[in-house]
Length: 353
Image 1 (tube, rainbow, N blue to C red):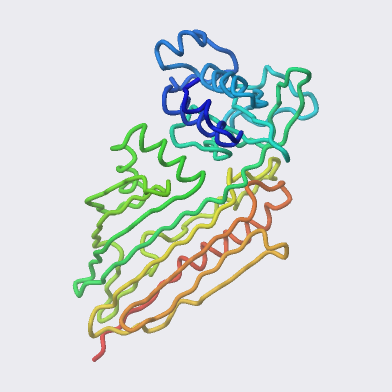
Image 2: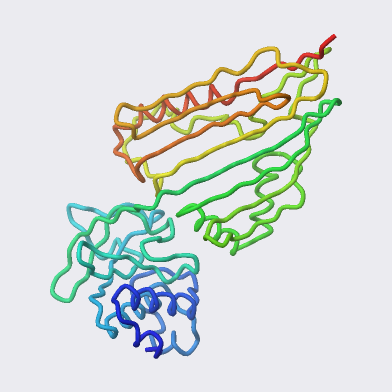
């Protein structure tokens, strides 16, 4: 036990210090599993190990410091939900550390360099785990209480020739920030390339970085000749540019059989500020729209305003919980449909004679 940790007084400080030490000292080899492969001694020698070796070593250190720590065995999201009627260790593929506190548990996963107390990687949040205490094993509900935010912001200028140029930023917080940070660390070039592939826009000067508060942001410049249709003296354009929702993921004909899982409650804000070229006016403004479920769980709004020679469009989606039972499917289908309809409105810019 590092001396600096032993001298800490509070249990919370000790837990955080031990977690930071293990997370920063040891590197996950990407192997999952709930059993050690090469053993803890090998982990200490090589500073590399599988998920069980790293997080079980974390639990050993927490116990050494006098904390009540136990393994929480889970099934990661891509491994499927565990059978609540008859939970079996056979269906589990990952282990994290659970530390008992006065009113519950704090969860830690030292395999992720970006994780922190109760801020686990998205792969871990799968509703339930099995707590393996010394005296008994028990089913434990685990919910992600961190709200994630995604801010997509574009400031652009419409040029006289019908081209558009401007800047774009994509910022994530919470669980979503951790997800994109891991994706970026895995392959930075592939991560940057996705912007061009997803939007078919010529982005340049892409700069991705972790901000001081732990958020992750990518900023870039762009230009395009394909976002405007010129018809005589008119320019036809969707003011959302390349950020419009063009599909409804919930528009399925088959009956929904499984829960809806977003990993984290979230708010997604798309903001576009468009500078209108001199000599042009907006013929008709897009219609603003707001829709909210009765229980306030799902909310969507689309607001368009003209401010001088600029058009500002903001679409906001708020999801209050990390997951929903299948009965919410019709509500999501309706709201996602409203979002798609709102964000595909077009405007006409007419040249003043």
